[in-house]
Image (cartoon, rainbow, N blue to C red; front, side, top):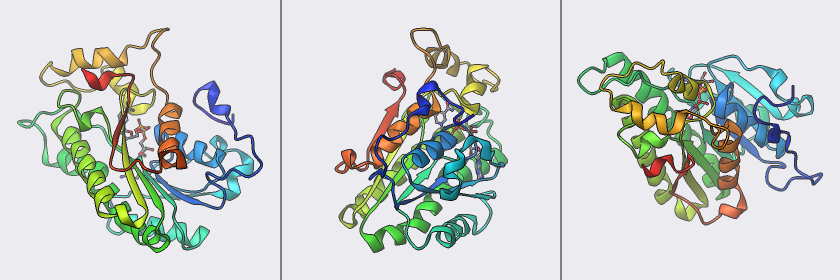
Length: 275
Ligand SMILES: NC(=O)c1ccc[n+]([C@@H]2O[C@H](COP(=O)([O-])OP(=O)(O)OC[C@H]3O[C@@H](n4cnc5c(N)ncnc54)[C@H](O)[C@@H]3O)[C@@H](O)[C@H]2O)c1
């Protein structure tokens, strides 16, 4: 199988050389499943050289054989000391000293614990994966982007980055924090050719989204359920959002069509965020 998402995932660019990605290098965290996998597949389809980072194994069958030469995977826990810097070093060793794009996708859901119940372990882990890792990844790639006065960063946040009613305190805080980091990077590097944006997916047809949809997360206060019911009960007229649809929005944000867009938090949620 070429792609594992929706039928329209078979999209391939019409031109022999795709100006969007040809000769450019992208780093994608969380590349082994869900949104990160779809982003990896979509960037490869646009001829980027992609360095994928994930703590889970990568199934190379999910990447076209023709793309294998432009895909480098490194397995490791990005919360380990020095792991983000090591991932970037490995990318530079594979493709040379240029990084055009960073997509921070790796993330961890919490168990809906409220502030009076969250454990130290859960808080530390969720904040480390969802907030500290993206900031360290940005710290590691920005010198390469500043050197060229060109670069695009997209951070995958969540509806929980702007709503207090869709996750626990750890996940909600981590994603709110990621929006702050996104805005700060966008502002501080606005005159150095670096754009930084966030996407806010709603309920996505991926492992995290499906866990929520199956109601397997422990709900502590009963507040989350009606809010989630608005997003996670797919119907024929309103199917769940696919990882590829999120990937396409991310590719739009890194494209020239979005060259004046920086510091935004773009919902990909079929209006769930307006609730
Ligand atoms: N699925 C949804 O409904 C949804 C909604 C909003 C936001 N998001 C966000 O989208 C992103 C991707 O979600 P998904 O549904 O594709 O999840 P997923 O679980 O399918 O993929 C997440 C990937 O991140 C990797 N990862 C987690 N911790 C890591 C670490 N410490 N080091 C390296 N890799 C690590 C996992 O191994 C996994 O491959 C997350 O940031 C999530 O918060 C998802």
